[in-house]
Length: 292
Image (cartoon, rainbow, N blue to C red):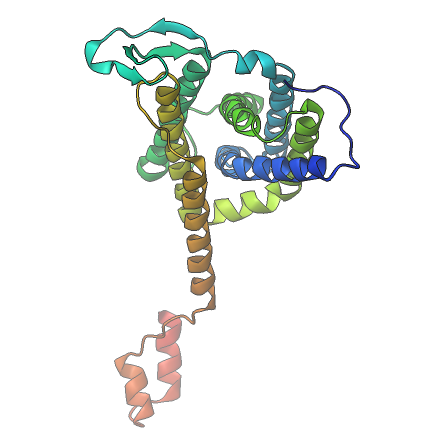
């Protein structure tokens, strides 16, 4: 049962739920920000902040709309249709019999969302590694380009919004607390989206990591859809998933920091060795360095 009443903010349990949900929304939004940075980088610099802010506001609105329909979302567990194949039957301990796997509403949305993430991440990686240039040939110019980017952002936000709402259901039972957590997390992400986007676009390895995370999350959504429909017995634990993501990001941050702190290697040629031995004039050495 989900409450729509104003929560009692004098209760420590409410504050713990609010802080936990806010942190969870920020964690789930990290990969969303990286994707926003990569997609918005296709636009002119003056349009990029607008695209990012619209994308994050869309994420907030979609999450709030889904929260108002949370009871309907939870009720989407009923099977839409069964997949009657003998080798896909699973044993149900509660019934003590073999049951056919099925597709329900939650599983269908997660499946389609996972497939979309796999496709989008793979196509972006292909374009960045095999593309003819920095500009996307399929992207229009001007206002049309901005609209195309916003549409892509909206589609990706539908997937992330549905996944985050399903994850948050077990933490709080008050819709007002969930809405406050969503608004706070989006405001925090808007504040830091600019510096994060600049950092991501300056480091291609971070872009590749972000797109790889999209593939990982897409696979986990497909696996979760299969688990909901009893196609497989277990799903990928999200704690392990996000630990792997943040460990990879932490490792890459260390690599970037180490590269900045290292002094560049100086190559010593024959002319510098001859100068040190007093066999070459300083003017000739300076001219050689200028030519290099």
